[in-house]
Picture 1 (cartoon, rainbow, N blue to C red):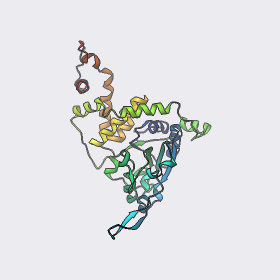
Picture 2: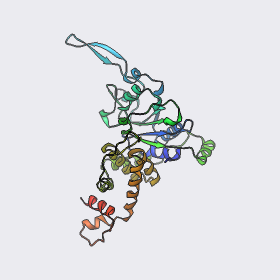
Picture 3: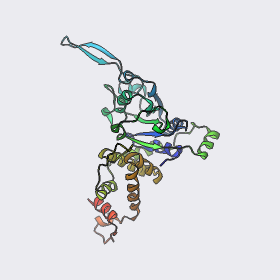
Picture 4: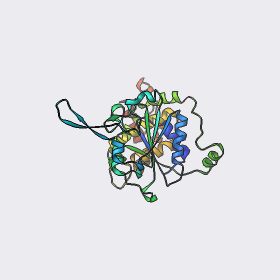
Length: 312
C-alpha cells in the first residue's frame, strides 16, 4: 500500500500529538518537502534533524565530571542542542515545534537508540539523554527502505512497535500543482487551532469501542513476526485507537485510516480491521437501545460485537 505525498501531509497535520509518523519511500520523492508543508499548515516551527550525520555522543550530550557533596566524582551530561528541551522553553513560548528526523534510518544504530525515546509518550516520558523534551514538540521522520540500497539500517523491532509507517509515492498532479504554486508555500490551515483542540479531546477519550470489539471478535491482541515491519501488539492497538479518534475528529477519509492501520498493525491485520471498520454504518441506534426503545438488532456477528462492546 502507498499514498500520495499530499495525503501523507494531511495525516501528519491531523495525527495524534504523541505519535511519530515515519514517511518512507525511495530517495528523491519529496518526503522532506511534505514535512515542511505540514509544519506551515500547522503554524509550527519546523526543525529538521539530520540524524545520519550524528554520533551517539551527539544524541546523548557530552559527559562531564562533577564532584558530589560526598567527595566522590560523578559523571553528568551536558544537554545536546539539536532538540527543543524543556530547559529552554522560553525560546519557543507556546509555539508548536515539528521535529523531522530526516533520513532517520541512515543514522547508526546507537544514534537511533538514543533518539527513539524522544519520539513517543507524553511529558517527562519524552527525553533525550537525561533531559525532558519541550512539551509542545511533535515528531515525524523520513527514511528510505532497505531495498532502496540507500545505506539504511534495519530498525529494531522495539522501534517499529513505537512508530507508524506511511509508504508514499509521488503523484503527477500533486507535483505539477507544487511546481506552479511553490512546493513548500502553503498557508496555515484556517481553524487549525480549533481542529487540533477537537483532535486532542477525542484522543483523550481512550481506545474506541469498535477497536475493542475488533480485538474481541478477532481473538487476537498480539501477532508478532520478525519478518514484518509493523505488527499487532497491545501498544500498536492503542496507537491505532488514537489515530481513529483523531481522524474522526478531523474528518479524514478511510484511505488515510487504511494506510495508517497498515503502518501500525501490519498489512494483514489492517485489511481485516478495515473490513470490520466499514460495518459501523450498519450499527443500530445505540442511544435508542439505552433509552429502552424497541430497536431491531443486526444479525451479523461482527456488528453484534460492536453493539455489545459499545453498550458495556
